[in-house]
Image (tube, rainbow, N blue to C red; front, side, top):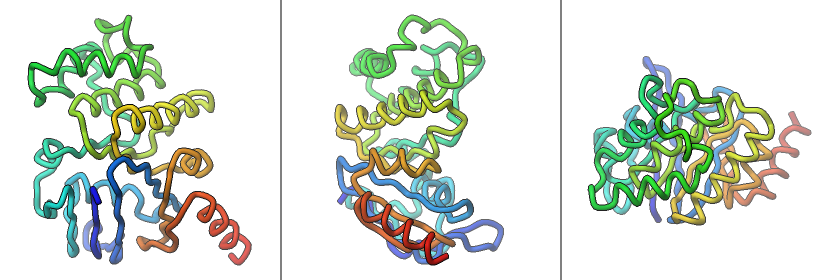
Length: 233
């Protein structure tokens, strides 16, 4: 097991969002988290990444308790975090953005890592000197993913990577997620509002409601559970 969350309680300003959440991810898996707005999906990613510390519970990553570990140390330990909307340095070039993402990797593998990232996103190859702020929305999403991948994470946390994209680009981004998983063996935890797309790429998933896991299983089982709950709602 690569990651395990045990009985996680977390929230903001005294308001509890996650209520005793369990979750686990094996190496090489794509796992999705789906649920209505306010279910706590993004909060799960913030807890794993270290942007939010749990009030109670344990986070085990690569057999090490990282519950109290700072976020920057978790990145160095192998957790990559793609924030909703994609974070890029608008005033810097594409190449400089990739340099920022790979700032902590060994110089001996930096060039190879840049090449691997550009092979994954060939649309960026001929625009290395272009300012990131001038890129299209889809290109910014790809660059933001590339920045995270430059650190060679073992676990990639994706918070709504399709947000704001046209349907055609959503398909491209989802294909890239599968390619990252298969080519690099990177485990992926995907939070996505587009349920159909998420269940297409995931091998397993969690259905959240009010900060609690109400169903866990294979994509086809989750589809049935959603349909059943909609019928009985």
